[in-house]
Length: 269
Image 1 (cartoon, rainbow, N blue to C red):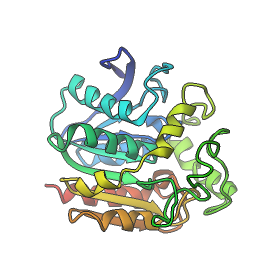
Image 2 (tube, rainbow, N blue to C red):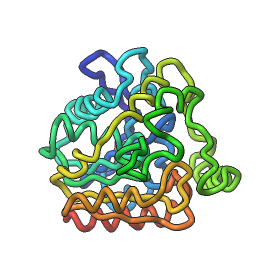
Image 3 (cartoon, rainbow, N blue to C red):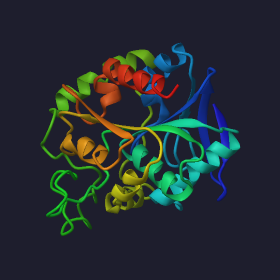
Image 4 (spheres, rainbow, N blue to C red):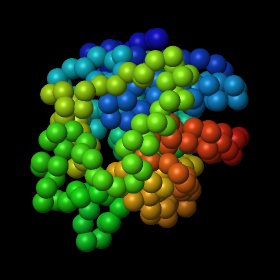
């Protein structure tokens, strides 16, 4: 693993291998870059430079008590691209990792981006009378307490027992269970709360690079239609809903995820 130090003094870890167009993989809440192992292999074998980035308080990166907001995570991506000497890249983010990408874009724009892929992350988590594709059960009325014990079981989508079974292939590839952070740690709960309060729909509409919104048909967190609704606001965007998949599409359906990712990257050439 390599490291960079952010502008506010936090050491972040990343992996870097291969050549060709750089593809940066950014995992979701509590997840490490290891959860992209099946995508890492496919991308490397297809001739891409693959970088797995652990956000602050995730994976092997430091876990400070400060900077636990999406804007800072977006700045961290910028610091990482600078320190790693990366120019044109494709950013791939799963769940909260997608929100970190949107935060980056909101701050720094499209200059260094060739494309963006987001995996099962609604751009607005709070449901209201206009937006019905947020987190199941989350409204403005209960936003302050909804995540106080971590991410709740919504009782929707793919059953938890079945979803747990899907991780077997990833464990086999790694030779162990992937590293995960504590969702209820005092330094990560504020991040989850800040994440829940964001509305990225204006950023999604302004993305000036090709974008792909992937969703799991049986996501446990929100209706899969969030992907088509988001893509409909941007002429350079497309949506793909993957059947027989819950929220972690890259784990539940790695072959279909890899096929979609490689097809998107080929289209950027």
